[in-house]
Length: 210
Image (cartoon, rainbow, N blue to C red; front, side):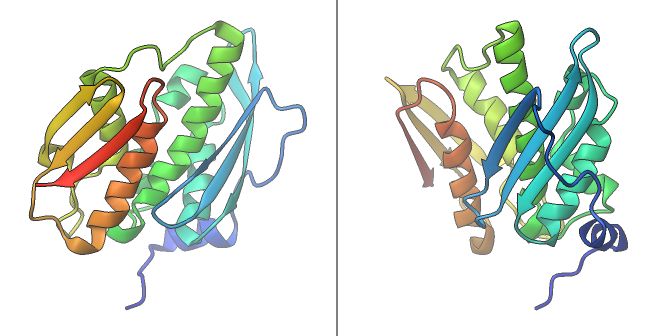
């Protein structure tokens, strides 16, 4: 079955904004999605006196949703302070595009990942802010909030379906409830493993459907 995109998604795919590379960027980061193999790199030019993003560009390898969300996310970030841009969510990106097919919602997560990673790299290198200082349930929960999305016409896994998060000497166990649409279960598990694995101190990640 063909995937149905909104007119705005198609427009940003055909004529993406902010495509390119910023030479001598103040920060850049590359993120990939294990769910589909897409990749995005975000470049930032930042006014160090005001922490405002003067310019932002991206390059991507992937589908129409990946390119469109990269385009809209960079539009949303330009002119904002790094704190304001870091607060941009995948839902904002999807809403700005008039929605995304459920099977493509992870593309909005990927675009935000690229932006957040570039900002966090800048904050760590220029301001000494380290986000991965503590491995606890709260840290893992916050990462899962970023990965998992609410249902959009189908039964996609949500944070409410996470029954248990356990941590034992760097091993993280996440249990999710049964009843999720099998078409979305494996990609979502891959996203969980990918995100939680990035937290400093995590040695292994095990996701179980219970």
